[in-house]
Amino acid sequence: MNAMNAALPGGDLIDAGLQDLSDGRETIAALLVAIGAPRLRQLGFQVPDLVPSNPEHRLYDLLVEDGVDSAHSRYNSLIRKLVSFERAAACVKK
Image (tube, rainbow, N blue to C red; front, side):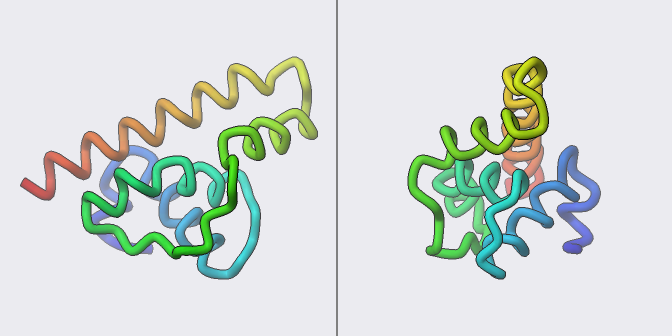
């Protein structure tokens, strides 16, 4: 885990997603990083080029597998974590 990422909100999730993408695994964390790939790259993160197509839909579908009743709220929570991480990383990079 990157020490700087660990200090940021959601850093553990982002680090896991970066590793999962590098390893070719389609996990919740990997799909979240895929959704944020353009912004994360802009912030200097090395996001693998192997970003799945339609990561938003694929993430939601993966969450539905764990429970259709909670998928929407879990999806929104994950997106909020991503945005929070991106904002905090932008402040650190300045």
